[in-house]
Each structure stands twice: as structure tokens, then as C-alpha cells.
Length: 240
Image 1: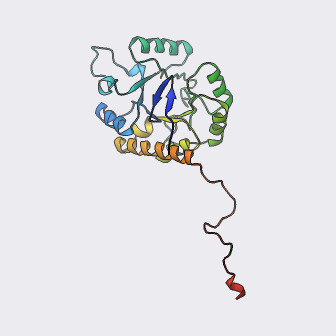
Image 2: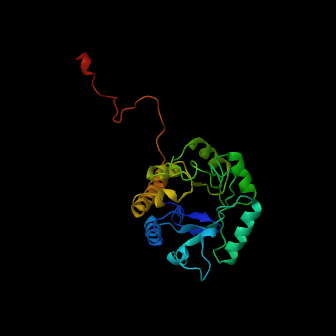
């Protein structure tokens, strides 16, 4: 089935999966998982990027000619800290995108945005190229806890909606895509799996399957059963 690409910041992407770079057992394992995911955008915490001469860096394992870097402001608690981190990302040559994170609470850690349609609209009005509502608290693996709010967000904004945080396994990613989301961003679900490379492959397939199901158009939900085969014209043997 024909499908359009994901457009972010004026750039076209075939993959609708965005992956992170933290929590992997090793940089080599991270590189293999990113490759298996089929992702074209890779998010990087600016605070984790080593400066030249400071030893091995995760950027040594990411082909910046192949992947678009999405620096993020992880660890920032104020707008000033986030802006300073954005400037550092720009000066370090990490690209023109930024994933804005400002932590409001250190225990529950909700640094992106919750699934509030009003807030999503305000972010769009402020100039955000995409809004990224959480599926569940970051790193929880609880999946899509409130699909109804995400559906309302999809009806409220015109920019891409990318679920970020809370995905635990492939079925969670498929659900997000079946709702009509434009993409899914994840890190822990892949990096924390027993086999990150295999999970990355599963996530790639789930994103593709969920998107295809959304485009195909699911059947409506009914309270009662409906026979798959027509019953009109079938003899009523009970009266014979």
C-alpha cells in the first residue's frame, strides 16, 4: 500500500522509528541495534557526548552521514539550562534539530510532554516541529496507557505526533502507529532488552505493521458477534 514519508523540519524520512543511544551494554551493541532498527534519526544526549581528546565517544559509533542526529537536552531542569545545552549542541556540530527536555520532577521524570491536547496545541503554536506525548512514564515499559488522549492530540495539532517514552515491547509500538501517530521514539525498550539487536528488529517490524494497519483501516468494534459467512439464503434445517 502506498504511504507517504515522515517529514520533520523540512526533511524526508522513510523510517518512522527514532531510537536513542543510552543504556546499551556497549557502544558496539548500540551500533548494531541502531542498524537493525532501520531508524534514520538517532537521538543523543548532549551531556553524554565526549569532547575531542576526552577518549572514546558514542559518536565514534554513529555514521553521521547515514543518520540524522537529534541532540536532546536531557538532564536540564530549567529553560536556561536547556537553552545553554542547545547552544552547546549547535557549536558541537550535532545538527539543526533539538529534542527539548526540561525535567519538572526528578522522581517521576516527565521531561517531554504528557498526553494533554491543550499543551500539545500550545507547543505547536510556539513553533514546535513535532509534539511528543508520552505513552507512559519514561523507562516504565507500561505501553500506551491512554490511547484516547493521544487520539485527541492527533485531531488537535497539524504537526507530526511522535509517541515518546513508555514503550516496552513491539506491540506497544504497533498500537501507537495504529492510532495514527506519525512515529515512535524509544530507547530503554531496545537498549534494556535481553537481546537489543533482536528487539530493534522487532520494533522496526512493529512500526511498519502498525502503520500499514492504520492505512488499511480497521473494522469497527461491535458489542455482538457478526458471522464471517453470510447466513441469508441458508436453509433452516430445523423446520425440515
